[in-house]
Length: 332
Image (cartoon, rainbow, N blue to C red; front, side, top):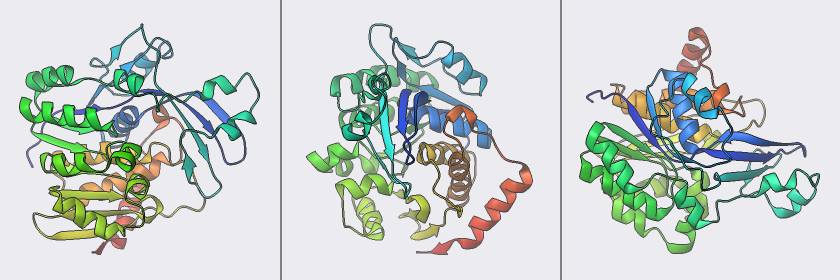
């Protein structure tokens, strides 16, 4: 595949609050799918991401400068001082799974001064849309810069708008995570049937598909996404690894995850997978090799709770992990 530079990453720059399985908590953390994907791409595989996001008046002072120092181009991030920033909350369970937003009974157990930090905004449709770049902004960027694009998890209407805008503007490569899973559960998956054929690669997570397509075996889901038009599907399956399937060639593989001795913080791991995959695949790696590199990167994300703490391990460790995953790949 021809290389284009850089990768544009579209999604959220959020402020996160987390309740851990042991009852401890953290607030005010930088997060969001666009930040995790961009930071992972820059730190782990040397990519040159341009982040497209919207931040509000309460986004921490100096944060954008710190993000830029980590190799992420933030020139396309809009700072709108007339709105608050998007906020996301999670509660983790002992098995590593999580609930988002953090349930109110769990929040009520926290000290009263902390509780306002757990005001999740993801169920506010107006703020959710205002916290993301719109079609006009993305059209202008794509028309000016062309290139390759990754769309993080987005509300269905914005997914439609941005994908249409990118294809109309002549974007060369477009991949996307799943549209908002709760919308798909409520409204059905018409948006997928309508637009999967417009993507080069579709990269949903099983944590999303298990919400709107509960009970359907993952291999059957991959075939369904192909039937709906997706030429390449990568179903990220957490600790179970990833299914990688190319309808154009008929090839498909099960790529294992790195084995972990304990349940670690999975926040951002899927986004890091997407960002590093986009860079690797569009700079010449084969589909399988790019998925393997993305799997190694996602494993690195499990060891940090802040996207700005992502760091590539030594070359020997990276190589050892790559070999371990490669040796575990099996055909589907």
